[in-house]
Length: 270
Image (cartoon, rainbow, N blue to C red):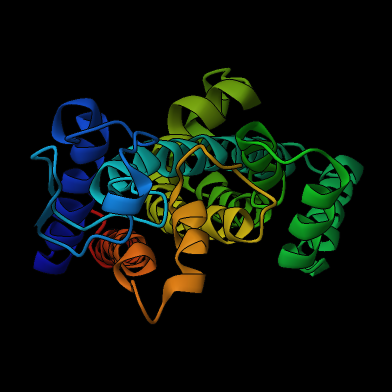
């Protein structure tokens, strides 16, 4: 993998490890707060009257920003990962089926994919999120069901190329079924391109999750996610910029890391 890809992978690995180890790395719980008058808006590096060190300061309720960042990472990364799994699974299924089954079924599946691609995703996300009560589960389903189309198109295009290769004709001559040929031979050769698209989709999913939570249509307070943390800091940009800046920087790092990894995988699949 290229050096840029290793850097991106290291960024994602560090943030994922920090999210997993949040209960041990966080000095207090994400919703724990002492005396609000004494602990609200403490600057980064401050130590409160209880002797707790606040690496990134506190918010308007006296909650530790570092603790909320770590626990928010668990929610944001989990939601984005599950949404990506849903979209990739649906995309591979539909795209692979369209490539393997020719004729009217393939035309219908490709037409459905093109129609879904023509819909503005952000508008569709806002519409779906507004129709039901906001929650993490809704964000996962919504992101998953609105993000499968590029994966389906990629799977279809790559699979059609592989299905024209001599080894596929050999497998057919040996009596291999369409499903077996696709799973055993075509899909492994398509996997590198799918892995790059999946990594890029993960960065896109976490950005969209943060956007929905920021608008109040995703994860709901007091549950910490990066979107809700950024939203809580929008009114304190002048007097306490660290409240929204810290999760914003973390979000940028994840997107940059995912983009670097995807670019490296696309340029050098081996």
